[in-house]
Length: 298
Image (tube, rainbow, N blue to C red; front, side, top):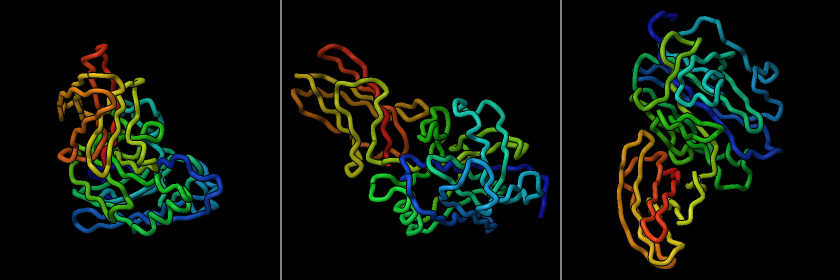
């Protein structure tokens, strides 16, 4: 039933990094359900002939401008990534298509929007289909997996500094429930008179847990199995103070330690929720310096 009430939506951006050039065509469904049982299904897939626009030869039909159910409506679109430098969504976004079926090619970006009135809502999938999709696209590279997050993916990596807060590895579960609008990036769009909420699914190498924002001398790495950050000195008799911040700038952990030679110390992160963190390492001696790292905790 078509309604004119306020429309809320979020977007799932699927960005696939380092896809294989000769991947075979493959697709799988994503299932959506709101709090009162309204359901919808989208078909997502890969095809070497796919473009960034609407591919009618692949069964993609543009629904932009057609009536829709404002209570619960799920669609692929292209609004959120119209300006990759507007990471805080201060500008209005314009969508050029709405689709129920979307195929992508190498390094393509797609988004999924949902207009939902009844929170919470959930997204579910078949874990075997996810693993098959990853195998089709990434071949024998077992390090690249699909990650679902509400952080805004700038250039394919979820590193928005002003919004977002959820993250999940798709192959490790079969559903994700979203219940709090405060944990989403949001923007205005011609799709709706109200806010569009952003959710992202990114194909990334999960073994690359540290991105250096400066050229560091101490070695810093994240151990997924131990849920800890390891700081290793490359200087003799070094003293460090380490601070861990979430992406809202809240200091989560502070620790000071003196180490010598190639010795190291660990900082446990098992008490912190999954997400992106900034690690500031203050080398107090020798040679006072500050080094910054970015950690993806899964």
